[in-house]
Length: 245
Image (cartoon, rainbow, N blue to C red; front, side, top):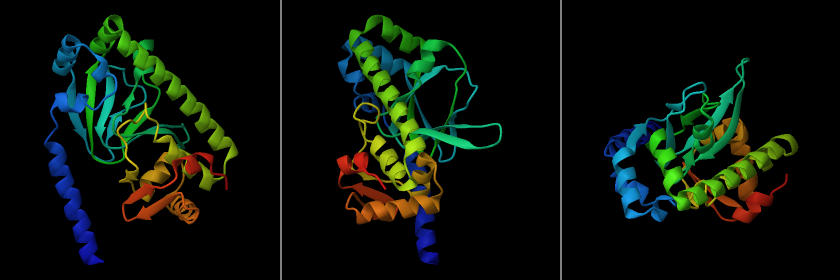
């Protein structure tokens, strides 16, 4: 057990070192749906004005009440959007993974942010200034089309999450929250093998780590996924989307 703990600690340190070597902005943007539809002139301006930052696991990407100054994208990592009640209860809204962007609606409303976003692991993020975002709205039909689809997908996700929370048992809720990560518009860069811990799954689904572990065992027995140390491989995405306890 000591050797395993030391190995895990070493891997964590190496990951932090690697994350500090930031990927060039052009390469990061090349993996986003909307950037590929921009003109060369539009993309050149975006490359200059977008910045990359690394947020360590457990760090805040943004906080409830902050002014909304940037549109934020995930090049590599995993984020949780949530809110904490005055009584201290945390409500998880959604997870965001590789290729996902957040805050597009908040940028249009000129009001403080309504939620917290926390990095569940070391994450390399892109920050687009509000002025750049609004300029793209004014100058790019392709960008507007992307945002319409993005907002529609986000609305559908939140409606389904409310349904899951009110109608489903924990096993099914974990299944649906995992399936929700595989939205081709909200998280286009995610792969079928997720480097995700049971604690992270619990955070995303509003369950304890122990309860998330129980749910994963049920889903594995059902042939929907395969659980390995520190990762999950999705075997039947449609099955996860339709799973009932």
